[in-house]
Image (cartoon, rainbow over all chains, first blue to last red; front, side, top):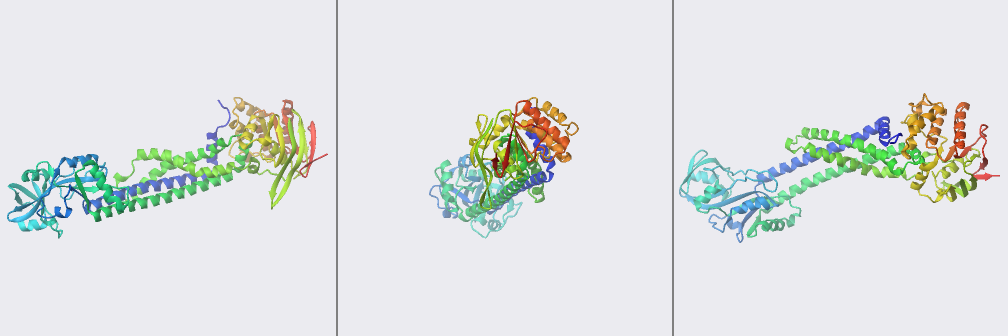
Amino acid sequence: MNHGITLLRMILREMQQSKLNTLFCLLTVAVAVSVLVALLSITQDSVDATRRMMKDMGFNLLITAKGVDPARYQALDFDGPDLPEDYVDKLVKDAKLAQHIVGKYQKCVQVNGCTIVLTGILAEKTEAGGMKPMPTAYDVADDTVLVGSAAASALRVEAGAKLTLLGKEFAVKRVLTETGMIPEDIRVFAPLHQVQELVGKAGRVNAIDALACQCPVSAKDIVAYLAKGIQAVIPDVEVHPYQSILLARHQQRVLVDRIALAALSVVMMASAAAIWGLTHQNVRNRRREIGVLRALGVADGRVALLFLGKIAIYSVAGAVAGLKAGQGLARVLRVTEQNLPAPDNLLLMLLIGTPVAAMVFALPAIVGGLLTEPAEALGDREA
Amino acid sequence: MIRLENVSKHYPRAGEAVKALDAVSLEIPRGALALVRGPSGSGKTTLVNLVAGLARATSGTIRVGEDEITRMGPRQRAAFRARGLAVVFQMFHLVPYLTALENVLLPTLARPSREALERAYELLVRLGLSQRMGHYPAELSVGERQRCALARAVLNRPGILLADEPTGNLDETSAGYVLDLLEQSRRDGATILLVSHQHIDRITPTIEFQLRGGRLQG
């Protein structure tokens, strides 16, 4: 056992003595961490907001059987090839490239002398790509339908009315807002399985709508990238992107990521500069002390530990304070509670990452202080 | 034994090389107390720094026992000092945020020792600092600081002790404490190199050198 003095004791004594330097260091780390935490929260919130906006823009991928012309699919007399319904489950389970996958079966039918596009839709029930199920505006419960505005006016039905389709009676849940487009305004949305039964196509869909997820490729390659990924799971399909929606979504995501990365880089660079500056000042102020310790034969590594140990202590304390402050700041900035980073994971990450980063930032200043000869550091040169 | 052969140290200043030491050769036998005298600016501190390995000679060879300091890198020189060489600095160089006792114990960072605490107490008592152990350097008088620095230097019983003007700024009482402890170290077998600008009555050096303008005289 050593009955002398320990490095930890020296570190604590020095921190106690140079209160201002310690306070500045602690504040630097706490501010950097709080900005980082708030930034993470805001970014996550922006991503969620973008998701919501993009969802409202509609699906951006249409998946059909091979050879189906997407323009033809929109035609009223479309009667093209269909696909097994379990393709939807396969995509949900295996596709890493698409989320919010919805199976549809649509058929043009005559009701009371009017032409409508009966569209069976299967609400998303399970998670795809780790995302939460996202209800569409057209999800309907059994025995209910949503009626397009033109169809509603032709059939003279409104919310709460009864509507008989191919011999089965449904309750009209809602009349959809006019889009000005055919066939959208003459669609009648009903539960997929009931539609399949009515048209004698049990277990079949003739289209799958999906929302493409984040793709690590440029905008020009995104369509080929998505088609390849989806065909790897279900080979006998064709992927038709709704280009404008797909690219808008992609560009929006890239923009959010870029802003987050830029802000993160600024925070990291500012923190690195501040920690380097404070350490440099601390090393300069303690030049003589460094010289004395080295004159006493203390190895350079142990002298460096005096500074690194101090940095480790204040950066751990700063990380804890910064996490709390960052969460508070995120709340002030109205980040939704669910997007606040999980405290346990983040705290652990910060408790390890912050001291490591701070020590890396400070190392050049410490090494610089150890490069001078002890006599020079002591200032005892006599000519 | 300490042996210097043609040791020079030049510092660049305003584009010129200032010769702090110029081709100095000397030999101090093991267990001797060598006194190097010279006026201010004669190169005494530079001599101490070079022998302690705190600075590198521009040219020449310095040997301390079997070790050739001039061939060592910074890490080896630190290890060499930790093994058994200590310096008493003219400016004391105590660490301001540590107490007198903690300052005396600093060498244990380089060479831990079981008896360090006991010896530190003993040295501080012997140097008349028993009431000052918990005081910070700023709370000590100049003489007390120098005594504290001396206690730190001899804590690990170094075989080589280099003292740079150890009594230069001290009153008679403090100087007495310091010189007595140096004498005791010599009796314990240490080789001592003491540099001073003045004559010191209370010690009888084994060997004496005069340094002037960076060169040994006579």
